[in-house]
Length: 400
Image (cartoon, rainbow, N blue to C red; front, top):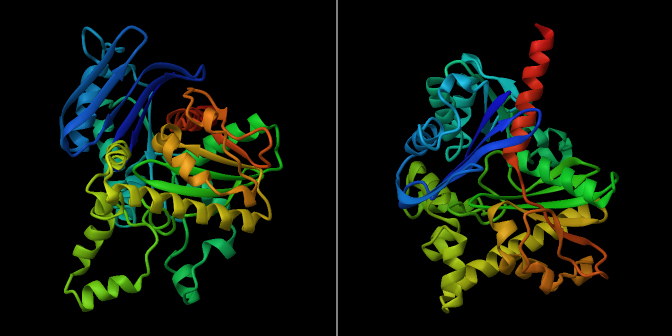
């Protein structure tokens, strides 16, 4: 079965074409820095590789680039679109009703669209991917896999906000949690690596969007993002945790309207607001040159992560491992070092030599005497989506 995976982030599209259930990658790639005149486009097969820098201003343009190369007469991997059996989509927000992988129909599309208000940087792009995939791959089944699903196990004491009960009961205002596809994949890999089914793990997903999850015995029990993917850690363009009274001050005193506040906190804040850059590679480079704003932003980022590690260790009454994943978590040895610095009290001791090594597989970067394992676990959201898409199609075929 040929399964195409489309993983649309807030500023990127990752994709893979896989043969299932063999889990064989036919081609893969990414469109990064969408919205930029210097977007990065990669496409890789066993025989060919394309690396281009070009303007890609919208997700729509990025998806068209991907589909054009898939059927390219010279380096494409399929002759025509009808060869694709299924397209699996990452969808960020599934609300209270969409918490399992599901076949896409008009009702599902309508629900995803309505939830766009809660994930404005993501759900619209996820939905755009579905609509385009339906157009380009009309014979394929479309399957939505939700980032919120893994966090369905968060207990009510951690899910519920201290608001009047009717907002939870009648309107579903609660912690949903995000990046669940990634957190599910990497914590399962870590549990296998540690050979420890009964475990207490803090999973740290660091990319343009960032989040942390407390995972007890393989289940999500708390998470840094909440009702929307806006709070918690400092992100590329999102502020993360902020006193909600700041919003009232912006409106009542500084004269902002609510749309301007939303844009400010979700598209103009975070690392962009602090430094003028969104890409951590640029920020680290500027920090090395002595840019004080960039250095402070890195310190703020690491400090926020430290606080969540401490909180989750307390909530789980212990800690077996801390794992770093996603683009920044896997590749920034500097930020990992800043996070783990002066954390001996919690049992974390980083091996500076192991930390700077690069490896495509799961690796341990803690010292031999560290009480808590520190791991770098490459995420593979696309594989997790492919597995869930294949499973749901297999089940539906058996039912038929």
